[in-house]
Image (cartoon, rainbow, N blue to C red; front, top):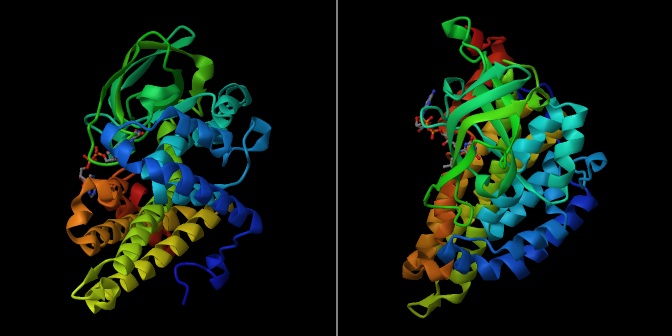
Length: 403
Ligand SMILES: Cc1cc2nc3c(=O)[nH]c(=O)nc-3n(C[C@H](O)[C@H](O)[C@H](O)COP(=O)(O)OP(=O)(O)OC[C@H]3O[C@@H](n4cnc5c(N)ncnc54)[C@H](O)[C@@H]3O)c2cc1C
């Protein structure tokens, strides 16, 4: 029974030799370059610039971007593999490199050819970074509730508003910004009237405010962005005016596969540390892995990680096939994988005993990082809403949003 899918072939996941070669290259970089720096980055809250540059040299910023825009090619699955491997070592590094996708995906899909030629190649080559500014003090999950405004004055749009929790804003050159351009025609169509814009951070009126001192992803703490009478040329509107809500939701439907992959990497990293520790540590004259209380934990951890990985690769595959079911799969993958990461990271700390809560061990950060994955790019409550809506749509043809 494959309900609500049509065929068992909908569950195909094909991994190529190229992907495996790429995964090994990333893992080598993570083991040799990132892992030794984790504790330092946790302490300083800064990822050294030379580490970012090494990732740029390896082409990480171009993954998922077509070659015609100077990218490395590869789709959602390749990008998920990159995110998973980076996050296994240093989850914040995965975010720092791949947050660009929240800008490049909507511009590549909805932008004009001029926008793509101007803005995508420098990001793909790692010359500049980009960020995505949607969340506001009064609107996170409720994307339609944003209060930033963009008013048309002559041939320019003037944006005013305050965005919060914007990952990578302090180092970004380009922002994808959402703002309300019209009031919705009726209460039930409140999503209508939002538009997305490309804004450059060195334009007058753009101010990067304070950093949020969040508990996890140390080294990639999000920023506040203030937009004070920022003039944006008409040619920087992305997609149709007033239809930006759909662009934003499509962007998150796609990018949350990356968060699922990040969670798989977090869980894998925490598991490997716990497994190695359980083999090395002795208590009562035995390796602690000999105690069933420890080995059963490890057995459950690795089982759930594999399930999360399969769900994530499957969602990525459907996204690469441009299948409508990708939204459904991505929500399930994000919910499941991030909650597995939370659970596995927590158990990994417990298997370490006292040293598990010592920052020097470099294991406890996985739990703090995992918690963030359950919140950003749509909380897991919102994912569950999407999952049930997709189920109703596919099974009964009911579109809850229009009910
Ligand atoms: C580290 C970090 C980085 C981030 N990076 C970015 C970024 O780069 N760009 C950006 O634009 N945003 C970013 N965000 C914002 C993030 O996407 C939002 O925090 C998230 O979508 C939740 O919104 P909120 O914080 O306003 O919570 P709220 O929407 O206020 O939710 C609060 C609680 O209510 C629940 N809830 C809300 N509505 C419903 C509902 N309809 N049904 C059931 N439960 C509901 C939520 O699940 C949650 O538990 C980032 C956040 C963090 C923490």
